Image 1 (cartoon, rainbow, N blue to C red):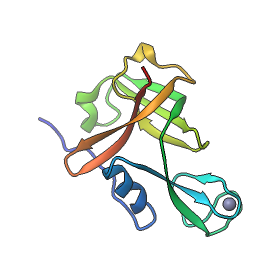
Image 2: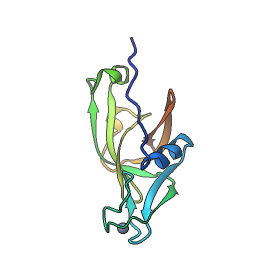
Image 3: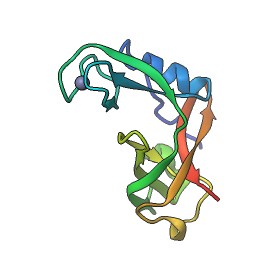
Image 4: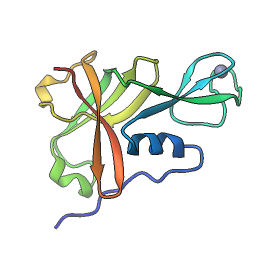
Length: 134
Ligand SMILES: [Zn+2]
């Protein structure tokens, strides 16, 4: 029996990110004061504490920063997704996000592997995943 998997719930602070993903766009916050990029979404810049953050669309080119291959489900909801390719990816803007790598074999994964974004729709939610640049 398929269990319904947990899906993201947007908050007022994260809503622009999830709205972007739903429209197959990646929006990140950039600080108007120190120009650094910010992820996960917040109300204040973690570098200079400014509250002047602007959402900007980025292409989403990234590399694997770290990864693991889950050969047993990390939760019952993911039993049909084994092996799960779980990664921390670093976007060109320097921010890192936790995600899944798709359209790849476990042996393909290595730190530094070039990735591009791919949007995966599950029920009412769209998730941001990444796949190797072929
Ligand atoms: Zn800043």
